[in-house]
Image 1 (cartoon, one colour):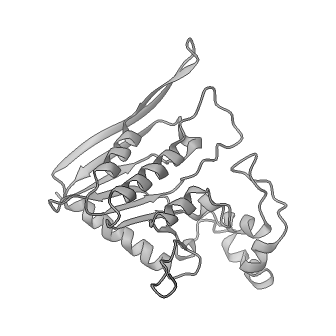
Image 2 (spheres, rainbow, N blue to C red):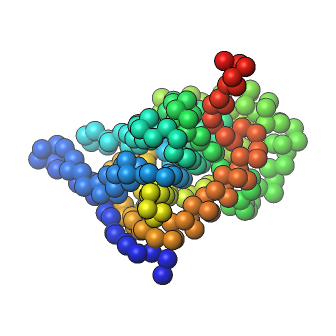
Image 3 (cartoon, rainbow, N blue to C red):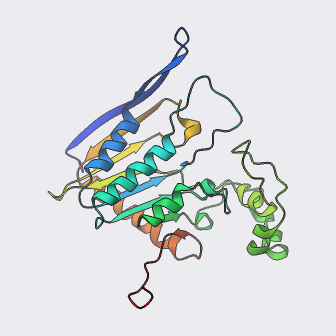
Length: 252
């Protein structure tokens, strides 16, 4: 059947009004952190929403800082195992289709963990009304000029965030996304495990309820091959890979 073990995980966040605090039952996220710590031969992660933005709606109590916590766990793994292959894939929404990336993407790249932003133009059009008419953005406002334009559009993801350019708004209106949420890890006994949750490691989603499935077996390697394909055709396009290129011995 493609797997030898399967486990259902559930995230629940319960607000306790008497104590004015949250009771956290985050099986999915805690399992994700445990899987990262236990990875031995490789690690591949693909997350749709992965950012610290909390939106305009305020929640009572504190939100768990999921995005930064996940980034720190990955950097710890890189420090502990500097030679293990690690690959991160995410959606361009996490840099608002431009240059507004959270700072930890730079930290991950500096630690030797490449971050690949999915090339959404390779995906089918979601907004069937807008996409056929959007040719004028490319003809009259090339991508470079779009990103150099004035920031005049309110940021829909963060009240305190920078405003967007018209180019960022134009790309947002395509409504395309790599909606995957996957973590795949390898072990020295040649086994592999995959965690597929409904969970987004984004601070604004910290209080959502989620479920996840943790599976061990060949299906994890099939999923890894699929993720590598996404990384391959996305990385062919300039600007889709966030990484630090090692200096050559001559440059050093």
